[in-house]
Length: 115
Image (cartoon, rainbow, N blue to C red; front, side):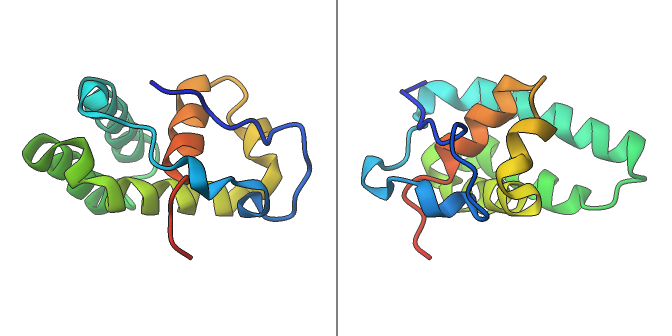
């Protein structure tokens, strides 16, 4: 996976304020297995701990990655990452401090998104 942006040292109200959009999308088809595993685990947690609330969107992303690949699923992955980032603002690093893969996913996904 490519180099990630480092805006965790700043305390923005909105994480999007500090994103360098010129860096662009970081994921490649080499990250397909990682993304499939991530979304499978995410789906399992949602089904187990949240009674499946929101599982349709996660399943849609997972199916898209399997069928269309990483780049073909870019918009869905970015949308999901933006929702996660927006839900916690700069506290996203506190929320996911024990989950570096989730932070990497969010940081890499929110690059190159058109607002």
